[in-house]
Each structure stands twice: as structure tokens, then as C-alpha cells.
Image (tube, rainbow, N blue to C red; front, side, top):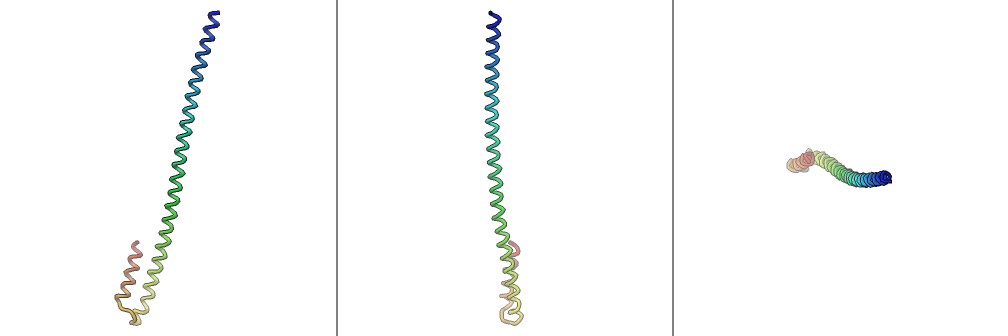
Length: 105
């Protein structure tokens, strides 16, 4: 009888320890899941932010390309009147300076 009680007490202690360990592992799993979710959210936010920044940069490049095209056109348009004596060299130079300023942006 005493031996049976000792075995039962030992089994109860062992079950209690296993239960405690299982709860600990479950807590670790939840903590890992929370960490993974936080890292996933941070990565998603970074990708979305980078995509938005890329779109804005692409718009700037497109705008600058159009500005450069217009500045080149302005110099070309100014060249003919200058050659015909309709505008001064200062006016032609102004168009050329605007072109250079646009190219440097």
C-alpha cells in the first residue's frame, strides 16, 4: 500500500512538472508568434514606404525630364530669332543658362 501511494505521488509530481513545462513552451510559442507578427508588420510597412518613395522619385524624374526637354526646346527656339537679329545675345544666353540650370538639377 505504501509503495502504491509513493508511486501515485511520484506520478502526480511528474504530471505537474510536465504540465508546467507544457505551459512554458506554449508561452514561448505565443511570444515567438508575437515577435514574428511584429517583424512581418515592420517589413510590410518598410516595403510599402519604399514603394511610395519610389513612386514619388519616379514622378520627380519624369517632371525633370520634361523640364529638360522644354529648356532644350527653348534654346532651339531662341537660336533662330537670334540668328535673324530679332533677339539679343543676352536673351539667347538666358535660355542657355536656364538649360544648364535644368541639366544640373
